[in-house]
Length: 402
Ligand code: AMP
Ligand code: MG
Image (cartoon, rainbow, N blue to C red):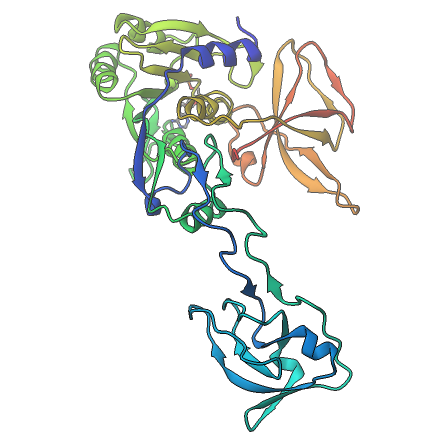
């Protein structure tokens, strides 16, 4: 049986590198950036005015001028104007170019404008270069603004757009098939008998994948019948890069998944990890390098294994290079009496000083997925240690990866 770290490494070794593609910026949110993005121009591209008001020559102000003849208006988007004399001002709007000859902006709230003259309120103190965002003060033409290797956030999209790129190079989407196994499972909306169980893992796993930008994930249900399982998995293997199964990997009499996968030449990399929940997890490689994650059916196990192993693997294969482990202190003592790594669901809470810690949320067995609602993720409690005191700092795995 592998440890958690060994299982992660074995998966990382097996993941192929996925191709890149260039797509319209509108389709790029949450895709993984695979190119360097450099500045198209200085930012701001000109000395940018940051207030509605007037632009003046500061030397005139220092010489005592407080009333200025309005020479004209410079709106955002207008070509640059020039102050004809220090006795003049130009009305400027936020976002406009600073007129030539001007080096001070006075906000409209400080002005009395009458008969083409703007008079500044008494006692107002102006400073040289105020309300001017200087050209190139954010970044310079040609600077590297974004490096490849992370998911495109709304802020990144703003940067790509401001660099003038209508298209951007990102990862190709892996095609993913999520398969729920189990004769007892009935999808939502269909009539259900007392002895049957609602199928919830499939929709949850797809939601987790799509929520991380892996939008080409479809779901289907296959019964615990080795022949049917074999036929359908054979088809899905030929049409997908990644298979994620839920259920049928334990020691029960209807747990056909490992045997059927072996009969389809999917080579087992490991079966079982020394962890709870999710110990029976199985992982293998198909004949065309498809990766096959077979997760235990218990809903908590299946979600934890998807977050712990599948998502990082998909990020890696897609060129995400910025994964890092976050640490958090435990808010309460935890006891765990098994020689396994424990993945304990937690809710993050802040004390009155704003210090964040992880509050354990008990699940009533790994079938209790209702308890997961409102949790932020889970903490990883090291194997071979049974007592974890409040304040112990441990790895935090948020459901939502950055
Ligand atoms: P298994 O891993 O197939 O032995 O399933 C373990 C437990 O998880 C059983 O109680 C199943 O009914 C339940 N289970 C398996 N798959 C799902 C699913 N897709 N949705 C909800 N519960 C499931
Ligand atoms: Mg089952």
